Image 1 (spheres, rainbow, N blue to C red):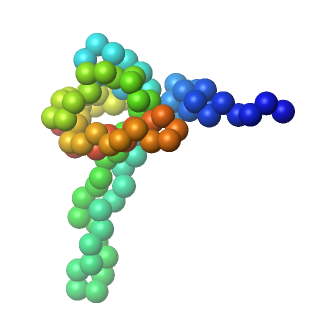
Image 2: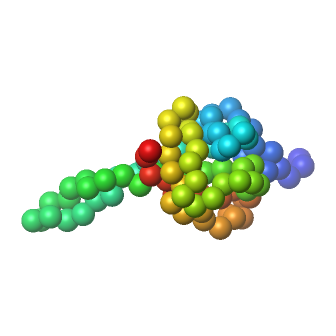
Image 3: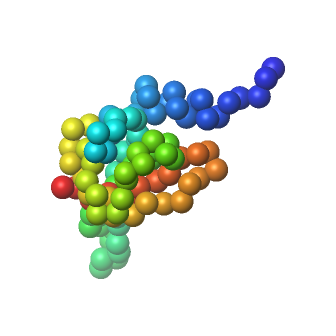
Length: 98
């Protein structure tokens, strides 16, 4: 059995199950994850916000920049940080709404 082409599998996942991403005039796929930010307060955990992370293929959006704007599934977001390229060829992008 030939080895699994992880790059092709990721491209397929982003194209078929991901969200539509638009940066400038470039369109592509990505996955947006919203994780709760929790803190302890008087012995209880409470959610104080959300962290938004968009995972995209490295190089898919060459004009991606910190403080730049993009849309995911039609909603506007602002780029706050761009992570390093991960071993699978993707990159995580920290976003805020608006």
